[in-house]
Length: 319
Image 1 (cartoon, rainbow, N blue to C red):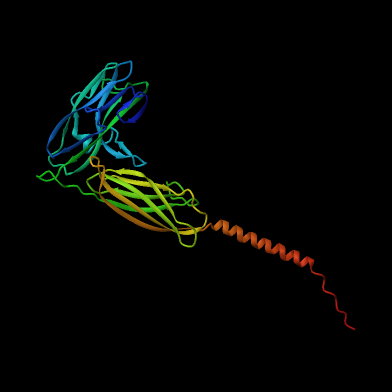
Image 2 (image 1 turned 30 degrees about the horizontal axis):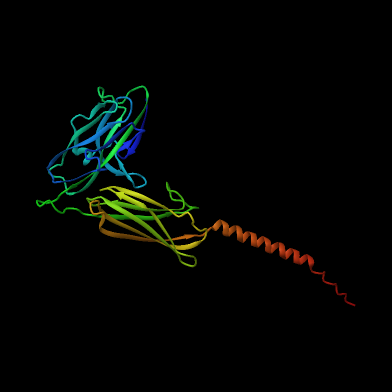
């Protein structure tokens, strides 16, 4: 059996054949403030946009970061630790008739001993599932589509329901993979930032590298798109330097600004900047060796040519 999944992040996809969104359709994601031990019930709205009935599987999953640092969900074969574990669908396998709409209930149960913090995940609906067998069809090429709606849960801390968030970023490594001498499993002409979120809240990241030549030349500033780093996740952030010179000595300073983002006020909360500096040098020894050999060869040719042009020394006869 060959099996493929096409992922859609958003609420609606004509290609997927259905739409998925919070019950309040003006919302693009689920957001909750819940105390440890509390339970909440909500609904996700689904609509079949196709001309045929659709078999759908509804489930939840924890958030993770893609290789590019963007929002993604873990797959169902990965052990779920928070949102993917807290959400329960009473009827996770349903058939939705052509053009029909339904509100699918689900419950959220926060463990009583859950540490406070911000947690991310999502609700997914996936096609290609047989609601009777509760598995993908066997012995066939099956293309499955999945739509995801993001979910963010702030688990309150303390009896007052306030506080408990700790933002902690670790800039574990800063390296450069050179054009002529790339690092193992790394792209050439690229800086790499090794980042880890050791706190209990979601961090938004802005990355910048300032490159200053030690001898001559102008300063360069490299940036990367904004990234999201979830709790306990690590990420190797690549930042390309396409105009790396062939020769020179440079100081590279990395600055990573990490902050929490309040979507209600559209403001950055408690931004902090972490930095690291490395010195990089480019000495093209092969090119230098070739130039030196060429100069020696040219000097030899010039000396031989000059020797040929000199008149012979007359012989002095003695009486």
